[in-house]
Length: 386
Image (cartoon, rainbow, N blue to C red):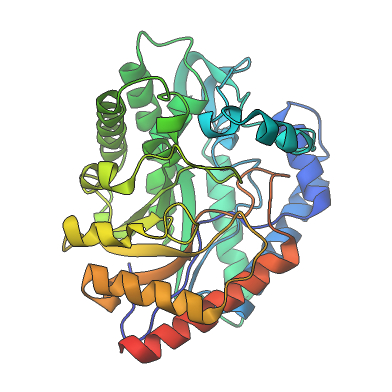
């Protein structure tokens, strides 16, 4: 895992806007409907080439394929693993439903043609990783497209979901208890994690379960119960990462990539000490939005372990405001001061820009403006910090 030696590097949290035609195909696939395989493959390749070229043009140092071939950041595993079927009934995030007038405002969003993350398939049988061809093809295609580009990322990465988010959002109707289920998912994910790293990618494990579930499935339970759940999920993830060096992995933790009050988000200080138990080389955390931008101070009270870096969010992925480069630079300077070493800080986004096909809250052109602003802000911070 590279560091910001001499200048602040830039990255993002994984998902990037998809073309409308591709969104329609992925929504159908998520529902089990027939899609022209050749046409979809061609659309995925064209869309992937497009987002890679645009990342490089925007000045992204550590980039990826934008998750273009995936219907969402986690439900795509139903096509690679056995044991999933039916329909989960997932609770809506508590900060949305506690405000009836806001829920009414959100109604048009739920009417979009998009992949439904609240009603993902559930575990109805034994969960195993049965088809590596998809991850093998995804990695191979990404490498081929990267090789065709005259410009290069300083380091490419690829995302994969955590055992905890799958076990929480794709609900359990097979295993005796949650612990058995999440550990079965972890065992299955080992194949995907190890293949991604073996192909030369930095692995990013997406773990919204470690924060967002506090105001979702744990909304009516004591904090200590939620913290026990966090420990269980990190332990399961660590088992899946057992053969992978920590410096090949970064962990993304978020409070939910949706526009809402977020006034029930668990404070970072409550979970940060537990996050340090993860066998990863860097944390990717929200720090740009109005609810969490003050939490850089947590690193003064709970110092970042020596072996970890920090990808700090300087871009909010839920608003169409384009952050001013000076604002971005200020955020990076504060993070560097809290961590104590600017070389351990990388500029990033709070979350992805289209974590499921059709669910993007930032206009596509503005996504690229935001990423260009991040590069400009990182350059300003670099001149001040180095």
